[in-house]
Length: 158
Image (cartoon, rainbow, N blue to C red; front, top):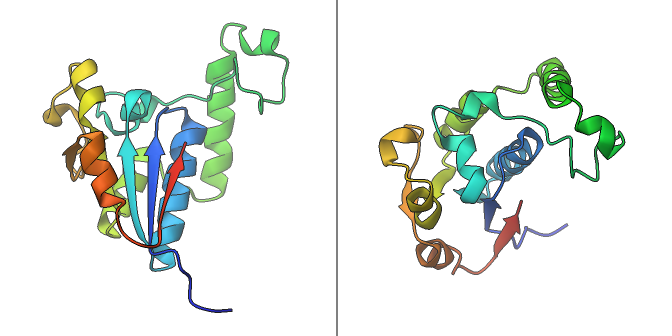
């Protein structure tokens, strides 16, 4: 097999359900482990994954999630989201998956760039001090696309 043509992976995280946040982080980490540049752009509700007050409280979406192995009606019952989230976190611990805040620190230390979307930051009336310390900055979508203007770059929307 020849050398990979993928040089850079850019992930856009638009929702901060725990499964979506971990998908972006695991794939970004995997890219870094393969020597591929990686960046994560947190936009709209994806900002919850890098907002200091919210990142430790991410949940599993039990309603409107077609992959959830239960009827939608059950997913809407009181306590079901908390239960599903607890079960998922327990399974992740068994696999030695770090919690979100630690995973973000690991990504940053590996050279993965972490960006917040300026539009979403403004829309939710956040300030840089509300976001994780390992954040590389706040970018406009135009700035983000400029970072993609490198041969061998792939963009994944989560």
